[in-house]
Image (cartoon, rainbow, N blue to C red; front, side, top):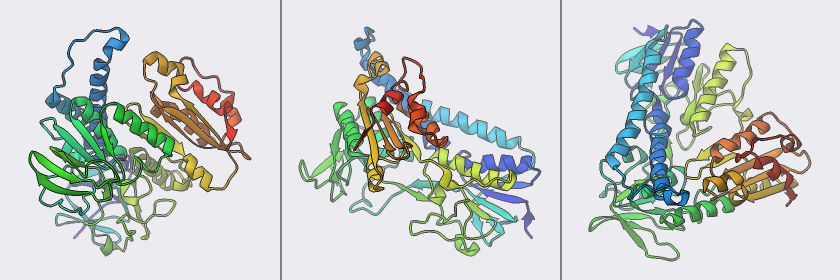
Length: 457
């Protein structure tokens, strides 16, 4: 006999608990099933602890540069166990707040265990059967561990395991030159590790425009990080004192020997043990749950939110998934994923804020374009802070005069980009942004000037 609910939410990441809150507030009896820790990736192994580490790394970096500001600090040391403990404490506190919130939610039954779909309206959790006319999947993803030559006999780490280290790596080799890999590379270099990045593609963060990618590479190399791109044959083997990583690049040594290896080569959705076949829920070739523009799966009454649907790999897109589902089901709205602007940040120092199309993507549309670029060395706020690395770029449609995309790689770039993101969300022409009167001195004050500098390309 099954235990009946009005709705079942599987996964307590970003979208699941928030949706449970809206459903219970509407008078529904809701089961929220979680097999791991409340909060999902972001709270436990993603944004929260890693940005705490980024903050510690920034503090160490700034302390080493203190003489530039006329401040004497003496020798700078890093207490690595304390750095890790701080990140874990911040994550635990965030998780605790979420747990307290759920514990006080009237109408919610929190069930700990592994959930599997047994039909379109039924779920089994460690032998107990639950039923509901509506099921919401928010099961997230995990670090990918692809089969790579020699990976079996050696120990490699994921970003999750990096958060449990108790000693600082002497030489960290980061396999994967994208967002997660670059953040860990820079922070561990600042903690005192020797760091090498190994990337198969010709450029770091290949989805970015070459000028952004090149600027990030130069920034990392200036801090003493070795970067090996065009790594055409990545392989692993035991070596004296650590692990040999085969690179086989077009130039340089054919292998790099490190004491620790971080695999930062993508994410895998947690859908392989969810019983999707039993319910008839379809997935794509990568295991992501197929959803429509309203986040409905191929089975009526089942929705998928967050990383598991392949429609966004960020906390903010998972949250927006919740907003879309809640608005459509409870508010009579018609919100769609296609209305969402793609925006994200890379939390190196300085950070990269990105919204919309890259220049390369915009050129591929065949539209007449306007482009503009300005180095951070011409931004007063950056000069005053002594942080002039990076640049701003913007691309617009020459006929409609609407912004298509922008990037800010520089101090405060992850915040300043929202001035452009908000303007794009409001569907305003770039002339509106040009006549904004931003506050001085800020990074954002250069955005109207960037607009003024737009030229045909």
